[in-house]
Length: 406
Image 1 (tube, one colour):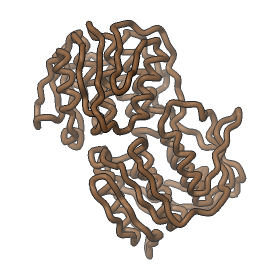
Image 2 (cartoon, rainbow, N blue to C red; image 1 turned 90 degrees about the horizontal axis):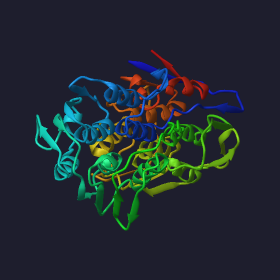
Image 3 (tube, rainbow, N blue to C red; image 1 turned 120 degrees about the horizontal axis):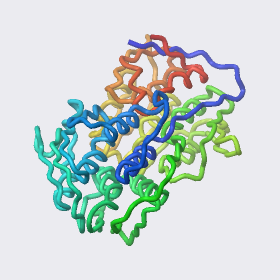
């Protein structure tokens, strides 16, 4: 068990170091692997667990690869191993073996892949007999996970006939597809998108350097603490507003909660300019990873919250909608919810320090940190789960007054 205690900092300006974007880095690592470039992250301990796992999988020679809870790795490596000579078995955690992957597997089979389910039909674990795929035309539903689409796009340049991919609407998390196309562009991969069809001819990438761009998704927790008045000004060194990361919209969203975003040569600056509104509502279908920090910030501020477009959350590391509802109920807020929405009103309160599960979900653990300034002290079952995306999270939180005690 871990305990979080809050003590307000006296510093006027605080610098919060963000991790590299695992979304961008994992795309670039797959492109490096597809085109036979040397992958070198140097000292990897500061990188998100998901990226370290990806490097080990791409460089490893073992027939069985365990991705644990890493959904991105499972999707991307399924396409990667299917399009490379050799036999591999992809396994994961118990939760991973419950997360459907049939949309991606069906598409890869149409393109010539040999993939067998070793457990529940439609879910990992998978046995993959890799070969250079024929490629060609295929249609994929865009409603369930953009990662299925990205997995195909990243490996498409090595298909014999390239790829003509039709995205069947509705398309969720569309900015992540844009992020993949941007990664292809940086690697010199020609592609064309007309309407909902993306065409990539067979080709080889140029040599490129890993961009090491800072992560906008991780910035959401700093935004939440500024909205709660934990510091006067917060700086994210090295973060840039010019980005393909869809979660950079976090600045616009938290502007509605009183946080102003600015940029200088040092990075991105946050200042709390006004108090919170009475209510907040938003379609989150293009930025579902921001749902938890937004909802938990609203609860801490006493802002009525209505979020929808959350249909991808039940199949994440945990059922994130259910997990949020359970945590809210522990602090006196009863939330309405369904498979794609959550809404609630009221402000969190606790007569004694509450104890929360983190559900083996990094974003739940980081979001629960946002309640510490209001409650004063909370307990978490497993605070270390944050290393999946943000290994230095608790070190950076200490700068803002949220102190982790083990």
